[in-house]
Amino acid sequence: MADASVTWLTQEAHDKLKAELEHLSGPYRAEITERIAAARDEGDLKENGGYHAAREEQGKNELRILELTEKLRNVQVGTPADDGKVEPGMVVTAVVAGDEMSFLFGSREMAGSTELDVYSPTSPLGAAIDGKSIGAKTSYQAPNGRDIPVEITGAKPFQG
Image (cartoon, rainbow, N blue to C red; front, side, top):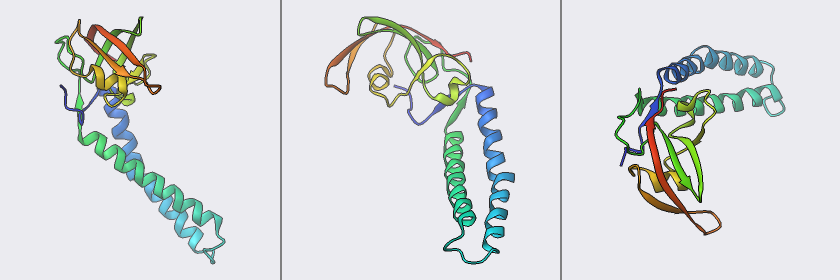
């Protein structure tokens, strides 16, 4: 089974996330700090909408910085081995409840601009197929309690 804490990214997706992190932790963080300072200079903070909005924006920005930092800390750039096993970074073809479907197994960040659906390793379907090989049959429980049968028919590295 693949290490669930590792996120596979294409070089393009990695560069995009890194650029976003640099912007948020550099110029944008400074811009928010300046807006807070300017609003603070207006006086009474209890009824200062600009101050409260800037502080809220600062909180959101800091949360996104933490999220990106953690994501980039556990990233693997490239594609997983083409070994026929379902693991993050693979395009999986499977028969799910009688219908054939293809999807990216991994993270939305890796998907970039692809039209493929993305299933996370932590989703019910993802948890059921993670580490399985082509030809494997398994099932997962739907939110309504029904068991959904799954057969893996293909697994190839995502090429972006």
